Image (cartoon, rainbow, N blue to C red; front, side, top):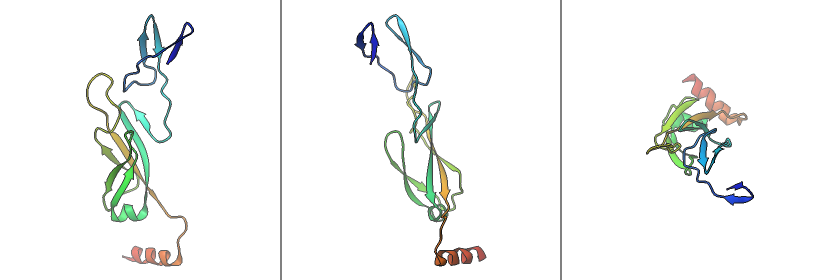
Length: 131
């Protein structure tokens, strides 16, 4: 809603508008300021998110839950996933402003390295390193 000459008016904001988009309303233009999100970063119609995974999941693989703009989805992590790996979720991004379809979502997998280990965990890692 905006206020024009002391009266509240509703203005329709189409899906997919970007920061700085101008929309004509009656005899004036409204400029859109899109607030940044705490989780997602937008580039055009694509969305980017960082997702931490455990060291065990990076090594052995598994299924994790990741946020999308439509709600959480399950994502299969391949065994041997390297830190910083990007996974594309096709069609999970922003709706195209003029037309059909959506952008993609990219998930960057960040491997969380444990800061504290038990003596047994240290022993197992040393065994693993020996091969």
